[in-house]
Each structure stands twice: as structure tokens, then as C-alpha cells.
Image (cartoon, rainbow, N blue to C red; front, side, top):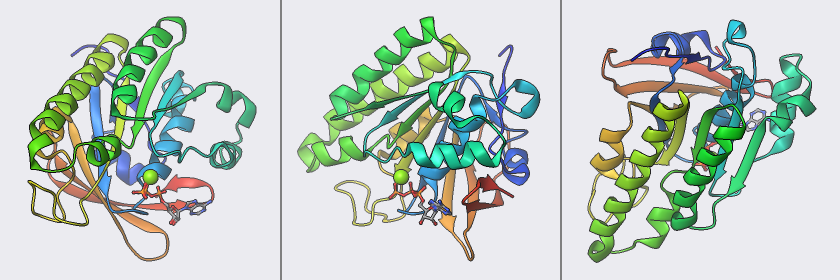
Length: 238
Ligand code: ATP
Ligand code: MG
């Protein structure tokens, strides 16, 4: 794969875990419990992606598919200010679309494709990848259809990544109650469909004092390992 770009997370340790930053032309899945920092990391990636390449950015625009109404511009402002960036300029480059259901969520990838031809979209975020799917397809009878649509969604995302040399970051929760099919409560939603399509899977868990532990679970070329990151008012750091 030629011309791969690397996006910094804001944490050196985390970037090293990922082999020097988050790779373009790939899907990076963050999964973990509520409050584990998935959305915060997405915000930081969005801010960083607008920065020049020399500063760990992608010098690009960002498209966020927000499925749970958790986008907070004031958090983007805080993180931008902490990096001495003009928050208005940063916000101008971050395009947020609310997805009302899983079908709409899938359509928004097409929308992002159109936008990417006019704008320089280098990071596409789907937060949360699985929440709508999980809520809409309940019961064992609908599982095959859910997995089929999730599979298509993942492939659309991967195509976007290749087409635009973009980084794709997606979030996923772990099932707190046993899923209809995946009985293990620590398993991410979507099972092997999401797992196989994601290029990198990271499991996030809370630690003491605002710290989070990120564990790289599945990677085509890197060992399974962990990094400790901090989430504070400034954003994601070592
Ligand atoms: P969910 O599964 O519910 O979407 P999540 O993994 O996306 O959860 P986040 O929203 O990323 O979780 O994390 C929320 C946590 O981030 C808060 O509990 C807090 O610890 C931290 N956090 C959020 N905003 C700030 C801030 N301004 N300053 C410091 N820490 C913050
Ligand atoms: Mg979240």
C-alpha cells in the first residue's frame, strides 16, 4: 500500500503502540465500556487531523457520523485551545452529521464520499458504529440481517478509506448483557463481522486518575500490547 499517512493520537505511547500513529487506508476500532474514552479519543483525532502533517496531522477535513448525539463542539474548542489552534478554524473543518438510524448511518457514508470530492476529508469517524444496529435488530431472528448490513457498512467504510487515503475511526461498545448470539459480556458488538473488517482493534478500559489503558488486540503487523493514555481537559496525552 502506497502513500500511507499517519495520524497522531496526542499520546506518544499510543502512537508507538500503533506503529507510529493511526494508519490511513485502514479502519481502527475502539471498543470498551461506557466512559472508557472512545468519544474523547475521536474528538482528539478530529482536532489532530486538521493539523499539518509535520505536526502529526493529516492536513485535512473530518467527517463525523454521530449516532448517539454525543458530539460536543465545546470539547473540540477546549482541545484546540490546548494546542494553540484557532478553535473556529478547527471547527470549520469538522463536519458532523447526525445518523437517525442504521439505514441513515449507511447512507451518510455515501454523503461523506460526495463531500470528500469537494473537501479534503482525511478522517471519517463513526461514533458509535454499532449502537443503532444493536437497538434495531433485536432477537436471534434478525441477527443474520444485522450482520449482513454491518458487513456492508464496514466494506463501504474500507472503500472510503482506500479511495481517499483516509483514516477511519469507529467506536463500539461491549455488551453489558449477554447478546443474543455472543454470550460473552466482554465481547464487542457485531462479533466477527466487525472484528475481521477492522484493520486494528483496540480495547479501552478505565484506570486510575483519568488514565485509560488501550490494548491492541488484532493487528496485521503489530504485536498485542498496551499503552497508557490520559484523558484530561486538554484532551488525550501520555
Ligand atoms: P460511551 O460508551 O458511553 O459512549 P465513551 O467510551 O465514549 O462512552 P467518553 O465519552 O469518551 O466515553 O468518556 C467520558 C469520560 O471522559 C468522562 O467520564 C471523563 O472521565 C472524561 N472527560 C470528558 N470530558 C472531559 C473534560 N472536559 N475534562 C476531563 N475529562 C473529561
Ligand atoms: Mg461515546
